[in-house]
Length: 222
Image 1 (cartoon, one colour):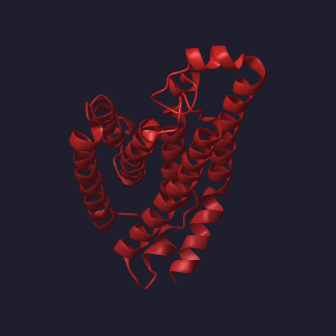
Image 2 (cartoon, rainbow, N blue to C red):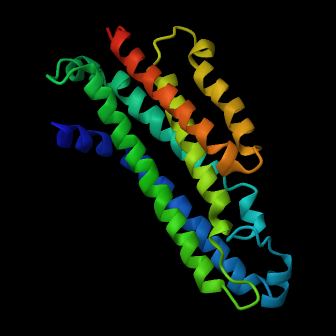
């Protein structure tokens, strides 16, 4: 049963996944071209920010990729069934509502982490290939990318709740995503993130999963 649900979700979200994969690959390619063609190696090494792998010009806007991917993925997962009128069929599957919502979250979360994980692997590869004796690759240089990726899971869950909520007005329906934007702004600015930011992120994600399962149980899908 889960395989059928996974196949359905992947078929519906494949366009979003392919688009995200293309943009992630394009970002890495842009950094490689920037390094090999536009910059003199000496200037490049002097001007780049050595707290991260990619050039600082890309770091400034890098958060838009995982956050945008998370938002589109969650909206497609929740709104596609409403537009297609397939909620009624899904609700009558033997495992029940909670199983259905949990399956959607597992597939969507897995797709998000899979795509962003490949991007992180590409960043690691670039870091190892560019390291020198003067500027060696350090795992701490990946910290900013991992943080953005993990915070993107919070964005995904908040958007999933936004699409699932039965609110009549779009303003009230967008409350989870609006509240999430404040949390994201606060979490990104936390100093010593792995000490003071990671645990609150896990708590907020757990709370959102609980609320999503509750809303999935009580919502009137008629």
